[in-house]
Length: 360
Image 1 (cartoon, rainbow, N blue to C red):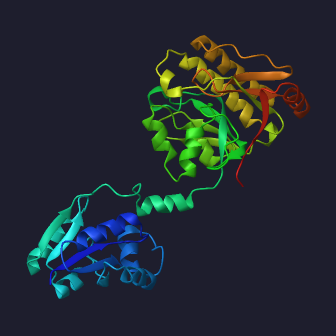
Image 2 (image 1 turned 60 degrees about the vertical axis):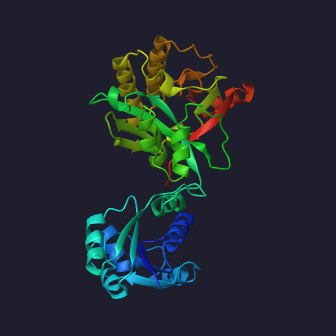
Image 3 (image 1 turned 30 degrees about the vertical axis):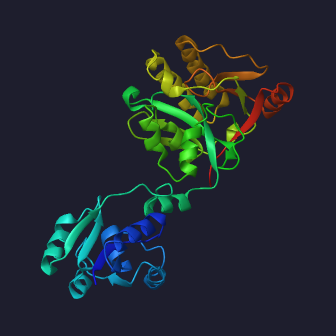
């Protein structure tokens, strides 16, 4: 009888594990599966198991392709199963291509004359997942805000960052979810950052990979009215709950989607953009809607200079600008009083009211 031995954490079992178990069992007659104990998990990975060891043992033992289950208690990282391996003396130790402990495992095989076998990762029947991706999915929020930026856009893109300068933005409601998305797509409101967060992914990495900045995932995760320091990483300068913006913001759909990555390398006046953010920062710091509006208008002047089309004038609006850098999407309008904002939304069906959002 040929004995096959495999090991892992198997903290959250998924279809990829089952496929690996089947492929390993096919190499012999008797499959032994070892999993790291909760103590080993804590010592080497600094995390708790998803379920108690006895429950994991019972689940694995119930699988038709598994003949024996053992729990690794050894504290030598990578081969916590050493004692059981020497006792069972299997014919094969099966690992995957990305195993990090090959030298230790090969030496262990040599002690009992076992064959060390690397199984290639075959295309799965399902979209591949990992334990860590499942944990992120479970922990992901069910709803998330989008965002409007007031000034300093592009200074969050690492290659355009300016030390000592700022980006000013605000998380907004209505919120979005994987089932409900009450906004246009490709709209300049940070939708890709919210989508990544809702799916349990790292929005910061996905935005940087697109060649754009980090402000969307940063403020969507932080919430509130935020001032960030320009740089390669999001560093919060200060945060306000944004209550002075209640009833004073609206967005207008310009009629076409925008494409920030497509215009990232356009010529623009970054010094003027930085000046607009310093003004908007003063407005945020002092909860001054008019000063914040001055910063918004300064930034809009930069957008016009870059070649964006002039935005329509809305009665009683004190400031306006495109929400994104991609020559389309939504535009932000500010009003000094809620009554003025509500009148504008009531008479112009291109406008919709939004509010600041700050998670308590």
